[in-house]
Length: 238
Image (tube, rainbow, N blue to C red; front, side):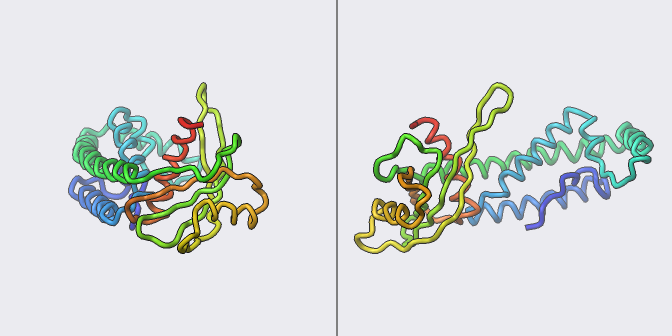
């Protein structure tokens, strides 16, 4: 999928029909990704562009900063003045405002589709602890299992905590270890013991099954949605 440039609004020709063509082609590609139940990085890209549009709508300085710049440091002040004059042009501003007024609801609509899809995936995912969960659960293993699939994806996870202003946030890093085919009698508890023997760095690992009732792309949907759910799950449960 072709990405939408960060400065798509102000780069090249500032013309309503031209920008409409660029925007609708991009949103059509996003819609196709959502139709195949692929959420990322498309949803986060949409959020970025939508927030950027809202910021530009409220603040002309943001608009000035969005004009493309490919200049030497010595020319920066002169070019900045020229951009300000362009922004102060009634004709250019009217065209940009028309583009923004058209684009904002377009983004909002498809963002709603992405949000609905995200929530649908969440509703069909269950997180289940495997065996006895130790007091230390900031690192361990995750089993990703999709309905009707024989293979289970195994990940090692690590939780990190970082502070921003007066709040603490949790982040998660996952490393893919292997894909295991489960047969009759091969339980998730048994898989956990196999991992303990095979990867000895975690002698008593916290281990969780992330079970999905629907089949979707792992890297584009199941894994990123599961990671967000898992962080919330740990915050509430432990």
